Figure 1 (cartoon, rainbow, N blue to C red):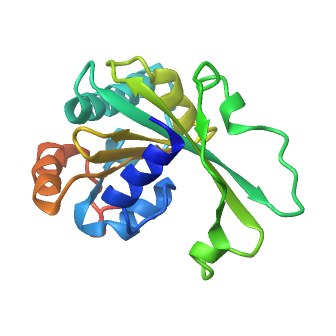
Figure 2 (figure 1 turned 90 degrees about the vertical axis):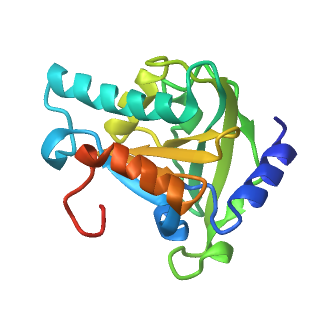
Length: 197
């Protein structure tokens, strides 16, 4: 997939949002639900048993939605604020360093959303095509769970997004009826809050 092909795919399937994970639940609320990675909605693992639960839940979801052996796109990016220098590049994080990323043109976040972003805030998206395999991407999921990395997974075939964060996963499905089906399937992992967070 070239950068141009990714842009065409994104604007065709997700025209109401930009490819940054925390925007999805607002921009596609009717297709969104969230699972928590640990019992009692605890945010961070406290030992090996918690890590086993977290990685098990997240792999079950991803394998259910993507299926083993299916292609997907792993997406990440880098924020830049004018006048501020950050010495660590996202693709230098150990868990994603082995992958060859394709970069897109930087997005001026202030132009996209002047209410929530200030002038000079830029985001450069990067993606890589991969093949899903159960537990193959655990190191990435660990980095996300420890808030060392932000990524999301996109199934081109199944038209869905899984965006892990430090605490759970935001999931965007093809339509609200599909969302309802999966939300019921994973009801034991949902938040008890009315807003689903």
